Amino acid sequence: MALADTGIKKAKPRQRPYSMGDRGGLYLSVTPADGKLWRWSYRYEGKEKRLYSGICE
Image 1 (cartoon, one colour):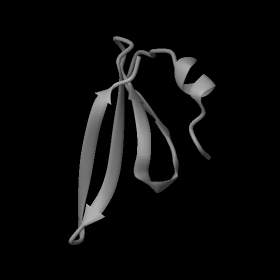
Image 2: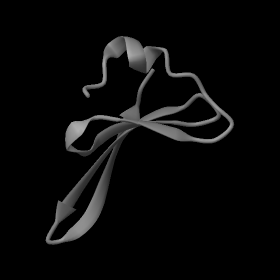
Image 3: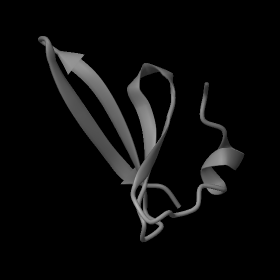
C-alpha cells in the first residue's frame, strides 16, 4: 500500500520508534520526539543497504 500525504501528516509519536512502510523498500520512520525520517532499504550485491533521506516536516 502506498503512503499517502494525509497518513504521513497524521503520524503521531509513540513511546517507541515505528515505521510506516511502502512497497519497494521505502518507509517513513517516526521517532518518539516526533521526528520523521525517510528511509529506503535495498539490496546491492546480495547485501542489504539502507539510504536515509532528509527530515519530513
